[in-house]
Image 1 (cartoon, rainbow, N blue to C red):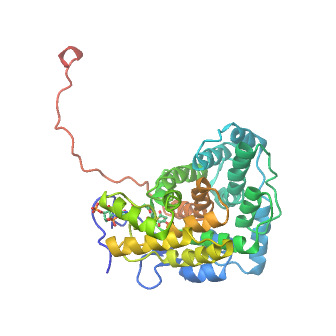
Image 2: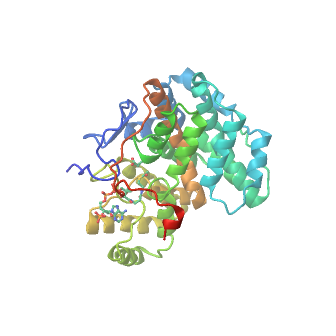
Image 3: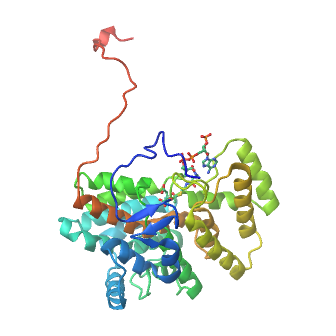
Length: 374
Ligand SMILES: CC(=O)SCCNC(=O)CCNC(=O)[C@H](O)C(C)(C)COP(=O)(O)OP(=O)(O)OC[C@H]1O[C@@H](n2cnc3c(N)ncnc32)[C@H](O)[C@@H]1OP(=O)(O)O
Ligand SMILES: O=C([O-])CC(=O)C(=O)O
């Protein structure tokens, strides 16, 4: 059954063209440049998918090796950026830190011509994990970490800096899958933000900074953190069921469920759910995974609402020892590819995005002098 796509929130309205992805079309459910996300998550590393999204084709081995070498060489942070990060308080939200970090990078390494769009994007892809971890480890552990590691992948680089040791193969593999699943999703709110900004012919850092702000909210990327906060409050599957029934009765929104476009399932869910189950077995979890499964059952039984990409990401990240406030920044590390590719697509065939509003205010009236006003 197709979802009714009409009403507020521009739902169902075509706001532009894209060749980057299809969401919710019959069949696979989600494709990037024509490839099924399930196949990409099974057969590729994240860097291959980033290359696909940004440069238009899957890289051959030589292209992939060159791309990884390029990204590895761009992980360092300028001192002026480190200084800014060191001034941000420990209790700041890491999404706000990343927003500031991206904006500061735009001051230091400004995109002065659209010819630089691929290079400034690759630079952000390489150094966003450095920005997050440099601030996190400085503000929480008081250490100035070396961000120029020789890790093979972006996910491995992130986990290495966060935990201070090389990640296990299983964890690096899960990061590849997670970053692939989060990479691109057509005209979602944060991508549309980036495209609106791009349509004014603004620079890449401004587009991405705005997109980070849109992704932060709990109705979008912030849902993975909100889902974690909810499930860690449940002591068992039965406890989860009882408390969720109460939340539904009070008509509370349950984060990590539902979707603006998909009607019956989010194809990313079954993939990340399997990895969460594997990680649960790996750490000997007997609470969080069964709790998550029960939440899924209750929501489907009671409301026909299904888990979106965010829900099982919560337990999966938790099993890898990632602190909850860093969940949405990981989403940024990945979605940056989709945002930037959409900015490039917008620039290639641009008209300023400027919709109309239906006016619901006062009729035309005279301005009273100040003494006439009550
Ligand atoms: C990676 C991502 O960004 S995926 C999305 C992440 N966001 C979340 O998980 C937040 C929770 N989910 C939601 O708020 C919504 O489902 C959204 C924002 C994702 C989509 O919003 P919409 O397209 O407006 O939802 P939709 O039209 O399907 O809602 C239908 C009804 O189901 C309800 N509903 C939808 N999702 C939920 C939910 N998670 N919990 C409880 N009720 C819900 C709505 O309140 C609405 O009821 P109403 O008509 O009585 O108001
Ligand atoms: O498409 C959307 O509205 C939200 C989403 O799932 C995403 O951005 O990955």
